[in-house]
Image (tube, rainbow, N blue to C red; front, side):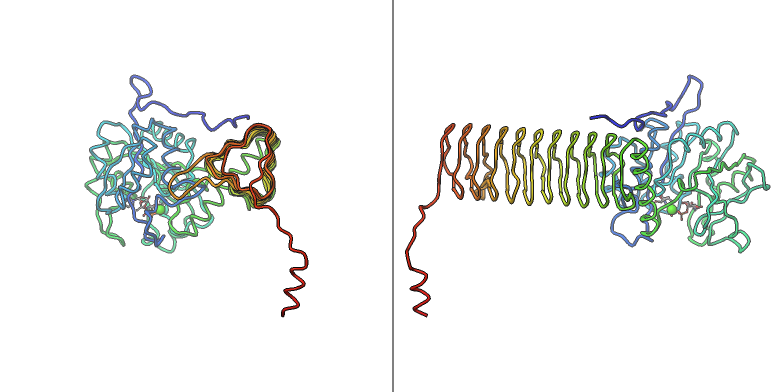
Length: 481
Ligand code: UD1
Ligand code: CA
């Protein structure tokens, strides 16, 4: 299976890039409740593109500085956020009471004292790329600014803070005015404040005490630092990105849906650029970490989730939901399959309507068919279980034929037991295999058998009541009526 490239390219520059280079930290504001989402779940844990908002931002940040220099400022449901982000290895700063974006940075003062500059990101704006963060940082360093903000021109700037420049072509910013405080003329400004900044740590903390809560929300606005720093003769500049969609924030469920759609489409585009066919991409949900090799075809209405990997020349037909699976080359997954943590080897055929649960390993060229459920099994090379079957806790060899309606009875209400079916065995339809049980190589089981004892190699086992025929019985019964 070919690994898709590109995702691991690193932009990390050490926090002190050269002996004399500046020490740079990233602070991510992620303490807010997200009132507008009307949710029990903290805002930054809401998912887009298959991952929490904050995780996207952390990932981008960790490509710019090492994770040890990333500080997530958390507050609302802090423990929950910390638990969800534990694997990222970033630091946390607790903002117990959320008194605004300015206050978030006040709280982070101690954590940031050892740095020269801090890149400030919003935990609810997940489309930001490392490339843009890197450019913003470079602009800030070149301009020797006290504060640099990232701006963008939006078609519809409603809801965002507007950037007031010193002059039409000036890099310098006079102030940021929030939507609620903006005059009708200011509301017409389409250049918005993205909520991403770089500050000189020294200048930020020498002046942050000047922030006030005299505004609509009675909060400390970080945006007010533009005016504060200018008054203190600091240089405040704005760098405008042409990639306006990167700054979109998810404050409402509708905005989250919009971001999710954009991310999904971008993922499909990336796969298509790498040689994957995706029909009707607007209907496909493919998570960011999914890898697919060239010449594989994804039909409409397919979900590929988690760390799923698919080889070349495979085909996933419509209405499949596939999570954390490894699918080899030339595999056909027919309509309506649900699969999780399964591995499917080259040339296998699955579906329609198969349910592959965790630990299912489908061998090369094997077939799993209609209404077959598998869990924790190995199905050997070329083996077939084509219809209406449950296979759990089983080791099945190569060239085995499992008849329609076969069931492994793997559970007695207390423990789970294993079924072993050796190479070339033939299991007749409607057989129940009461585990633990072993069916020897080349053995044969008559249809409708209940198998409770091991079957030796090349033997026939029939485990069913003998058929009784009563001549005329039905006629007599009808006559009695
Ligand atoms: C903010 C900006 C606005 C900008 C917009 C871009 C301010 C005052 N306004 O508005 O100019 O256009 O972002 O998306 O900054 N947070 C904390 N602690 C707090 C409050 C907020 O960590 O006390 C976090 C939130 O969780 C969120 C981020 O800061 O991740 C931004 O806060 P939010 O309330 O969403 O600000 P906006 O109203 O979007
Ligand atoms: Ca926001």
